[in-house]
Image (cartoon, rainbow, N blue to C red; front, side):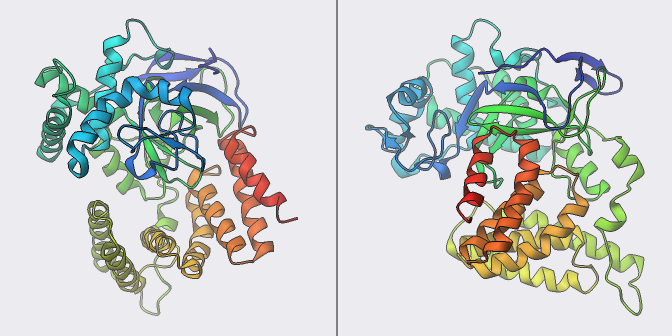
Length: 437
């Protein structure tokens, strides 16, 4: 494993607190550093498809003989995972269907156990210790505090029988807040959620809305690659959020989740905002108040969707699709199809089509989304790459070979920079292209 190369150093970034900067030149696509996860957990929905220990995706995994819930590549992976899996194995057997701690709770328990057996700095903490994470406890609102309390109650409920002397309430409150601010979600090449983890050295990077690096994952290792040329002495910036949305929305999201007001060049110039909130060309243009109220409506619908995501059954998906169509119709009276709120709804609708195996429907939405995505997102974007990838795979499934290969090649061009030329996802896409020849 290539642990973080000393091409970077920790420093005090003016107005931002600590940060990470380059001490040498990095070319576009170059690996800046790699960071193994300090602790990680595979999401429940991916059990059976990925190894719990190394996150490898394969068909022939074998399951834990006791709980029959966790799957592994081989005995080595099972042994490697046992110190963490044993915390859940017995409990899952005991609680059966009622075993349902959140992913955050599962991750926090793993951190607690890792801290107990870890006496020195880990390879994940070359520049920043997990114990140095900001918790921002003083800035938390009631809703966040309630969520924290619920998570702590669940932790006691599901784990206290199997773990002796858990940390006290104050220490737990702080740890949950630290994980909520500094945790990462591990995603695959189509941006499907695979799990959650903490990568202390990656968390050291500050945010920028036009970042110069991208974080991708190889198993449970985070890899940070340059997506712009970086010179010695320059600060290294990651993006904490989805960059599709206009400045006001990004600032709100950053303040709400990470407790700071972004003042990057993109937020100051707002250069992309006009295109992002594009209005339909109408004979009589809408009043500013109409536009404002439609933006308000769009943001509310997006928030409702986010909350509804917890109830996933067939009825939910049908309702979701109906809501997408309805909101697209309503917003379409004022917004252009390239407007980011329209694109957000189309993306949701495409997800529903994929779930329902309506391949033609998914393809139609994907085709509407892809070009505006290229305009709104930075040059090397995982959102753009994953959309090309989904479209390419849809085309091939629908026997549209030429379009399929073309889309996959576009995905590949971004992935070779973001994931690196030697990543197994890149090899997979190359294989898919080769098979069409």
